[in-house]
Amino acid sequence: MKYLIGILFLLVSVGAMAQQKEKPLVQFSGVVHNADSTKSIVPYVTITNKSFNNQTFVSSYNGYFSFVAHEQDTLVFTSIGFAATTVVIPANLPAKSYTTQVNIKPQIVNLPTFRVFPWATTDEFKKDFLNMKLADDDLEIARKNISHITIAASGNTLPRDGGEMQAGYAQQEHNNIVNSHSTVNPLLSPIAWGTLINQIAAGDKSRQNNGN
Image (cartoon, rainbow, N blue to C red; front, side, top):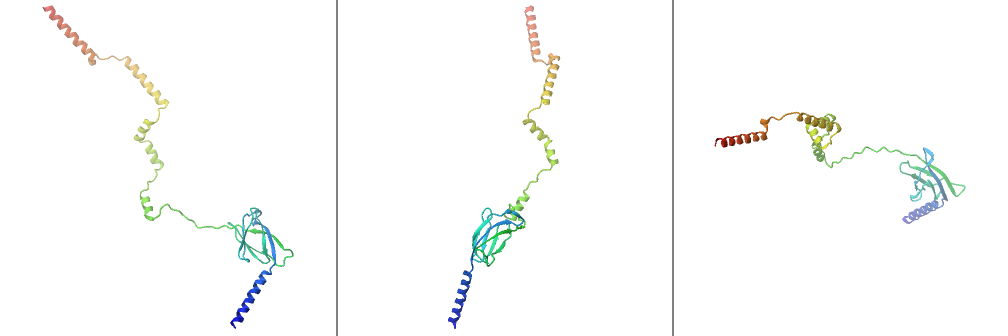
């Protein structure tokens, strides 16, 4: 009985394989287009024959493809950014070829938001947050720019402008004019005091000589 069942199973398998082999071969050709715009060609589309061991083909840059398949084979067209499209080759074709235009529809996939943080752990984030220095606002920046320290430092590094040089030259000319008309007090001059002392000493010597 077991042998009889095995023989029947073998015959059914052979019959199925023979039936599968009996499908006529077909030259399957066509061009892949964008379903939203039939004038737009989709290049390098992957074509998988689901009815024949997932045999894979790829269309050309112009979207053209041509390969041998069987009648009633199921073929799936896939490409990145497009939805998968299934094409079944009809049966009982009058010719040994089948040509069609395959339209695949663009597919938009909304991915979830993914945020990348530069901290590996929460402790690192807390440490950086506590040590973070806030940027100055416009008022604080203006206050620092007009401080005495900032102005003094800028005066040592920035070159003088025309107005500052003209004011300095006018002040120097004014000082020269004032000094040219002023008299020096002889009591405040060390040279005048020296001359006076020498004259007194010379007069004393002259009187001593006359007395003798």
